[in-house]
Length: 303
Ligand code: FRU
Image (cartoon, rainbow, N blue to C red; front, side, top):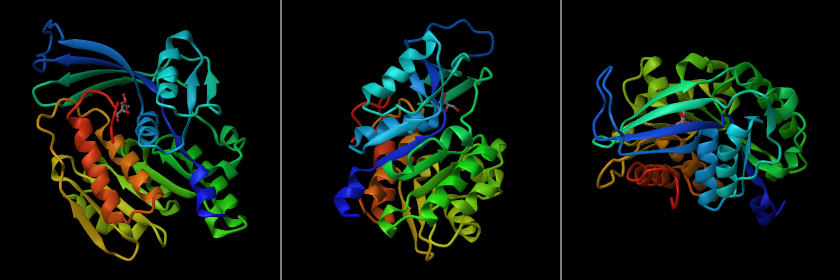
């Protein structure tokens, strides 16, 4: 396939779409306090959905796939994805309430405290996933959740990759180990690009991003790149050959909203790598755009 042919293909982001209810407050409330917020609004959330919006804003043809509530209350979250020009034609509808996060954004620090209700939402299955025509995609990112099914979905992509006509048709697989509770260990050796959150790294006993990428490189498959963002300490990445890069954080003038900063980092790195930048530049893009996100509320106009 020609380079332009590959460019026309989509990036697919698989994972959660939820409703975030953001409460912007002047100070973090004490238990049982009755506070008024400075602002309150609804925003779509979920790691895969957030990353999809950022990637699409950056100019990448992007599709979101997940199990989505068919109820009226969920329509604004889905519409918001579409407003970001994210393609959604393969989402699987389920008659469940939309998972919802109540988020407190402390405007003094930008910290985001999330109380998430999953509300028995169905998860996407490998059977749903098997209905896709994989020729449309050049990169598939799986949010690290629903691990057993995601493992099967990755198997479907592996099989597709083993039978493609040319190496250009091979789909790049990535995932993020974010929440330790999802026990994602057996996904680690399956991907080409592995994102690791600070929380996951700490749960493995790692003390910083460099240690994380260096140690996890021993558990990934040949050719895999590993990245780890560590909040205001910046981020590290390592190539499959062991070349290590560090990039400092791009702190905005004032940190106002860190919700989805990690999702923004992942999307920006994927964007860079899709455009053929090396790891060092992709890492820099991730840190720069995640920094920009922390300096504003929401995900609009990131560039
Ligand atoms: C941010 C986020 C929110 C969502 C929560 C789910 O990374 O995706 O949008 O409410 O995490 O854990």
